[in-house]
Length: 295
Image (cartoon, rainbow, N blue to C red; front, side, top):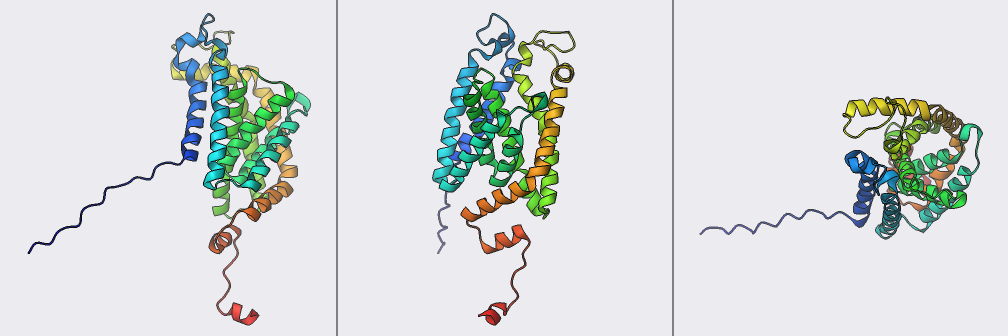
């Protein structure tokens, strides 16, 4: 008598969460917004409605604002954020926005170091939201609304998200707080330059100057990179270098105490298994029988 084989169960792939979808959509939107003038030759023509992001700038801003709200709600309902982490996000974003209004010599400010430390302590998605929302709040305070705002929000959000990506590596390497601060100092120096290099891309395709620094539709990738490098050196490198120095100094001086406070605050409202706490802190498991001796 032949045995009947059990019916094969259909393979069910897990569906991405709303938080995953909105986070991916935000990053794709940012990349598309930055690359649009390079992909469409019409957008760089002065008589085009897309010139200097006159049309797509407000649309991108509306889309990033809506998707940030969707991501925030999805993280709250999915457990990625709770009321205390939401409060921390609001406080850090507000303080960072205020710090951006305090201008230091050569246009540097303390905005970046707080976004870097807060993002490093609280994770990738909260770091993305912190970077985007704090820049939006600072635009309200300073009246800095314009087609450039969503591009600055994306650059700041990517800075926050990438800062948070450093923490798992630091935990695996068991870096002490001083080691983490040194890592964030180097990160602040790098992003002091990267922030200017990224945000300049929103306006470079529409800028007219010398033949070695002006974008022209149809340029090969190598020639476009060479011209942009020249443009960046002429227009922004000196200012961005001072911003990097400010980031490094602020993180080196204030990073240790502030990072300890932020990590301690996060650990107070995030439950973790005992094994994970020991792994993250380097604490050894109690020896067998120790509980009996102290009982």
